[in-house]
Length: 635
Image: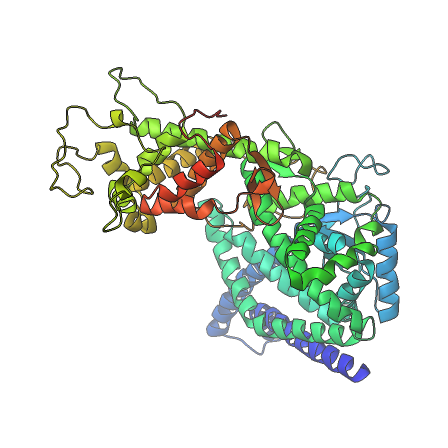
């Protein structure tokens, strides 16, 4: 073990020295004109370099030396004062987690490395060491240092200082899902990295690279034309040095990781193999929880306040469904790592709010339009409101397009919000005729194919003559041109997939929903930032570019239309058949019919949206006793 550790540390130190040599060469280049100017001045004062040519050379080199020194000083000032990037975290004070700090220090003693200076949590399934020795990373003093002043301020006030050891950042899902022994085994290679990090050469090389990276970020920020032109040269030099250091810095970090991994093999090596399986499982459950459960709530202006507890429920549900994961449920009897915290609920709430800010861009503080929601309130506060809001938006777009189920002489006429209105509008006459056509040789097929939820006779114009017997059933009358709003909205729709496979009505409705959502987002007030000291490490990272990590790309028109039609179906089921909104830990909002999940709704909705075929959906509605012609309650 000692040979491997020494080899990795030696490789890291050699690469660190290569980075420092690049810094020394840059300094030598900056001092070279000044050195030449000093030689010329010394030669003139001693009477050796005399003449008009030497006098001109002294003036040129003196001016060049001053310009280069001023430029080098400006670059050095920007690099030194630029604040390196810091990961958004929730700092954990030792008073809030004494057992966790004790476990980490004991782990550092077993590894014979310095203990981390502090512990912080991040809403991600990863753990690492982070250098926060820059003076700007010191927390500001607080008046109430002995109390937890709010949900998100978890660190007591202390004077500004510079920590010698890096900060240990732990993924918050690990604390709730893993057991204490598993967490210790996972953190062993991370904590072992404090040993190589304490070497002066490695620490200096890291500070130099982080300073260059911060300087590049400063010069890339939008500024006025004067500052932009002045900082352009600084940015060019910083990028040049950063490109020169890139290879050596990467190899240095690989050497540090190799040395840390080799040293950590002496601690819980067998348990670490089992714990790595839990890392992958926690990542899958966390990703599923954020995208399927948390994201719909964030879009509704609610943020789940117990995301870390939710990932435990999601993974427990996964172990119940998956036969391969049956052994994971037995782990729940052991002590969870979150017991190492004094107030796990408060810390879970803080990391949940931080996750909402990072992955969705939500506000920094709670308000009427941004309130926490508990899991037991999720079906009513999120699922029910989401479905009814989407259904209301769907009918607003239908009103804008001028969709009518029956002719009405009054111009300002709005049909009641019924599911039948949506289904009739999206039905493609060709697909419906083909789906309801009797099989060859079936004498009674036409009578058996009658749909109780088909559109009533008044939907067609009574003045239209009867269709000749020889005309095919799926042909459209030439006297019924497509309404102009459909053509305009379909032309604006950029969803190629829906445009190719869906009907013009579907494309127009999808485009209308996209435009309506864009208007609603444009009318949303700008996100406010938290006051100093009231957010999770708000002074350490820039929150102007939120969300930093969007969970999903913007939804396409087809996805928007399918979501809104699904919401309308669920509203009809709740209002006419006694269905209830529910929460599935792996799939998010779900419809409960007679206490069971309605898992077969999505393909039937897609059949209507993409193919214009309402038969599967109408059969499903009839089986469950849902009345599509009845109006539903909207938000």
